[in-house]
Image (cartoon, chains in turn purple, blue):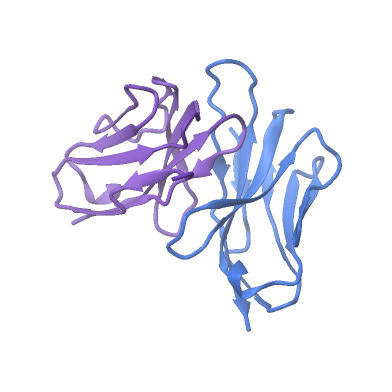
Length: 111
Length: 119
């Protein structure tokens, strides 16, 4: 496929569970971003990778959030001990330079 | 810190008519990009149009055009000949561009404008 893909598309977790969200960027895109979009809001930056290096994690809301991109391609966003306030759509975007291409997002609902 | 403000939570337009969505931003940077993204219901975000701050000419993409007023920090989107498929949430976004290795050129989004095109 030519676009950014994310899986799963929907995830329901019980409070306290750990979840892992996957992003497959466009092949060859050096930059990868994660955003969190709460209901009715614009996306907010979480973290940024350049190849395998996580260069900016200033947007991660707590130490329960962890992201990795070990081989500079696929990225995983992990949330430990999920809380209700973590319910949101998590968007991944990849970029070759100054335009970001978004995936469909993962809608996380924490009960 | 940069901020983006969209003061119109919802707008409605009749099919084939023209509508303008407003956006203002605040920054002290001189080198940046501005974007309009479209997010249809339950579908992914796609880029509608972008503007480089150093360009004085307003960007145009088919039925979509912008009115970029740099001094006023205003960046409105005009949609001409509105179509039913234009119904979506529209986000204005700002990117401060730093052209050095390792810079985080992240997007800062407004809260969005929900546009409904009526038949």
